View 1 (cartoon, one colour):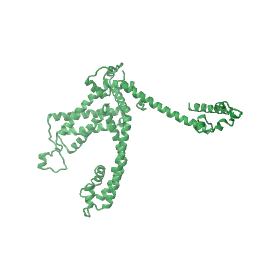
View 2 (cartoon, rainbow, N blue to C red):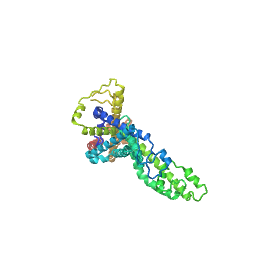
View 3 (cartoon, rainbow, N blue to C red):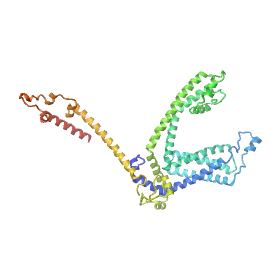
View 4 (cartoon, helix red, strand yellow):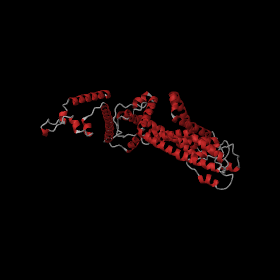
Length: 457
């Protein structure tokens, strides 16, 4: 169902209930245990980073002096930490090493499929950087590159915590929306990076001698061009230097201002509005497909867990019967835990606890309304097609004759006479139905209708 995007089948009450039974039996306990361990890792890493001076490290590129050594120290070894932080560092190192081993085993099992998931690349970067950050501290070293890697590790650790939350129905949809919009943003920026290079190199040639040094190198010029999308800083960077009268400041003034106007039209106005439009469009599509995405993630999670689960444990957690008690009062803790699973916890074992009867009735009525509207549209199109066929064959119905105002003589076919003069009485429309020409037309029309029904059926 997931591979073929069968949303209706996957959203059926039996399927959703089956998935939620699995989640409540072994999915949530295992996932919550893993989340708690990851929370300890995140707490240890965050606590160490927030309570230690990042400047207290050895930097070979900086000339050492007494003041620097007194404030921060500039030695390569001999750094000591309290027992609490040493335990935290050991936990960070062991946890990172264990997860690296786990990722290697996943590569062996999944092979090509492993490299299709971007989350695996994030986890590799996180655990390798965390290991490189913690091990030198355990050995008593504090290096400059070590703190740079630590900055990357703390960012990836919190970002990965955000990704973990997408498994929960309560707030997972927002994480899914964020990731989808981020993917769209990266794709758009990759395409429009050509414009960043174009404007960045132009401003580098025109402004590389300015006092701010923001355009002194091509790399800084590209960075400054990207930042100008959000903060133009026109008065300080352009206007003040254009009117100061100095020949060395804003030397190519007129061309610079022209390029600035073109930049404003292209980047802050056009590109930003394009990104906003794409973001809004993606939000609508993500919301529309949110049910399928969430159920697909649940299917993948349960499939992976069942493949790795020992058989004796799998037999113990297998559910053969499921009962739902809608009138039972749930406890607060049960209500909170099942809200994370996206279900109502008045359950013990096989029904659909997700939707109340009113929601089911409303959904069915809405589906019937959509079907009736589609049927009406189909009938209208078929009626229009039949009318065009009859017009092509020069067949006219009685409704067309009266709507178009057919003359009285044409209805009588020349057989109408004045009854007051003693002549033949007037032939009415009812008598006209008995004429041979009218019967031939009706037979022909019936044949056309039969042919049309045969072709459409």
